[in-house]
Length: 331
Image 1 (cartoon, helix red, strand yellow):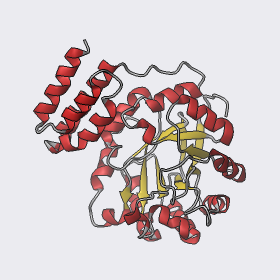
Image 2: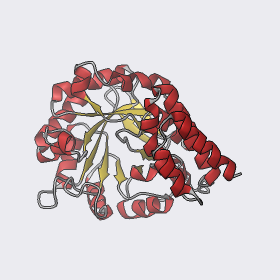
Image 3: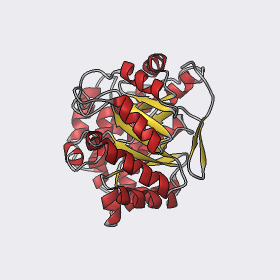
């Protein structure tokens, strides 16, 4: 795909959605909370972001509602990604998400985590294409907004039939497919097959978003050249780099690639994220922030020691003091 500024149009049963940015930020469990999403939007205000994955069963029991309640505070398009193996529960959850203001509903059919897959959710649906299609049809019939699906090439290489599976999902009512170029068996090992994504793209009439091994703007451009996909989704590449979506978006639109923040800016960003998590979660925010601090504080002299100390900070005040000290050293 050549660099373009053309919006991508998705049609729901009664609602049309325009994606002004063809770079999507993947939903990441334990990562893509509202605070992380707000950081991503600094560099990519129009990007479609997602809530962390929501279990339809949890919504039935009254849990997980906070992820939907946060939608009202969102500053741009926000999709809700749902998972479960029961069509009715998924339809009910989709209605709740639509009522909360979701931009669209995404159905997870790719999560490789064993405790999810063995219950038939996430990538477990790759083993039951008929049930997968039934879930898409049930959700599409329950809401007015567009339905999208995120999936993988298959359960394993021997049983993988990505073209057939994708066509069933399209026929059931999905309006966009995001395809990770690995099987469930691979999880995140090996190399994503952009060539297999290209085969699926040729077989569909709905837009396809390529996912897997996209860690910078050059990767995105190469992936699009091979797959002819309609856009890309960034996942693990954005850990500690919330500016990545914006950098790729700028490259796809033919503009200069946004500059990666300097070390001082990154440490300052880490401090801000920590403070936001503390304000939102209390002292537990330090535990949540540790992984972000570890990802963000890299690429400068003393970074390894700083990360070591931050992972062992006993109080939020200790962690903030460490970051303040590092900022002084980077002056």
